[in-house]
Length: 218
Image (cartoon, rainbow, N blue to C red; front, side, top):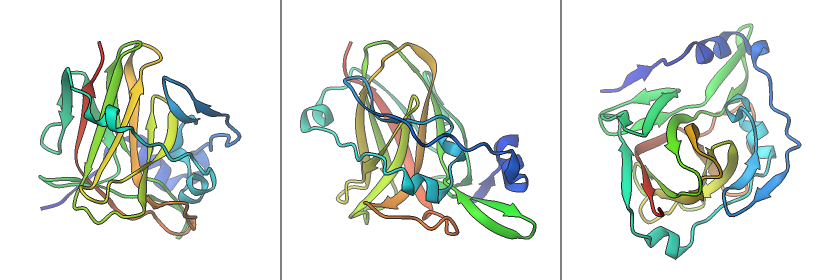
């Protein structure tokens, strides 16, 4: 049985008072370093689905060596386990079942009309240590994801990450550029590779079965 999750006043305020949302500036610099890849974007959660599409965020892949590296320790979240020592679910917009989270876009209403949609995210908090390499694995429900990517932000850096069509997983690696007990990991919704999005339409609902972070270096 599904249950609606209403998490924070931020979401509730956003649904009824669009004017209070401040859009981030979109003219940010591309970053591609040993620590993190992507574009530095503050408050990605405030962008409309059309804004996210127009950003043309880079598609970021993982090498076979990174994917197969031995894990030294790990942290895992499921709908039945919302905290695992250093990793914790903060909030999200959508539904929760026993087997998966279902992330939805948020409607922004002016008067009686939906004027745009804000991309939904699963917001996590993670305690990371300087110069340690971590691997992130996201398991989506099912495996019919050919030509699909998801939006993902790790510690402020955003990109598009391909979904493996064979097993419905998203994998990436990052090296922490700083020690941070509140590093944000924001898991976004599905989108088509190189596709544009009409702001009057939401992204497809995205079902996440679990999130796994593994430490792969000392």
